[in-house]
Image 1 (cartoon, rainbow, N blue to C red):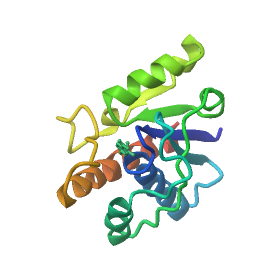
Image 2: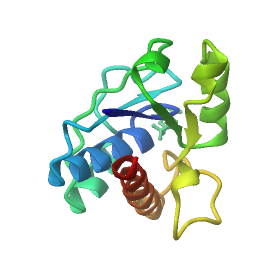
Image 3: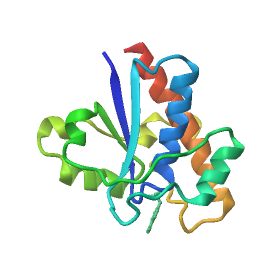
Length: 157
Ligand code: 4NP
């Protein structure tokens, strides 16, 4: 059965569109587009329609990812369409929990940190918005690791 994964952060211009671009590329490279669908959204609507932050686009491009997602806010229907809603931090997680229309919908909410391997001591993906270049590199390291683990579990199931 097709697995549908939605990455969620605050603005949908840094962390979640990067996760979206990374997992999308992993899925395409492995010929799994029929099995895994990827999207991203933000809990805050203020950046709707925007491309990812240029600092994130540049850092991701340097690793071979082209980020073309346009920001959108998460909506109630996302809990029907997607099998997993993956929050970047506790605040995103709690906002999703509040938005979830049913107990079944709440069971679809995960934290990205649940999929960390080398960064297992972290409980969240830090918001890089007010950080320097290293903040974006750390986020990309975490997202590459988490996406690889999500894909591994999708393929196993
Ligand atoms: P993101 O980063 O949640 O990873 O997209 C942010 C983007 C925008 C804002 C905060 C975080 N903001 O306050 O506008």
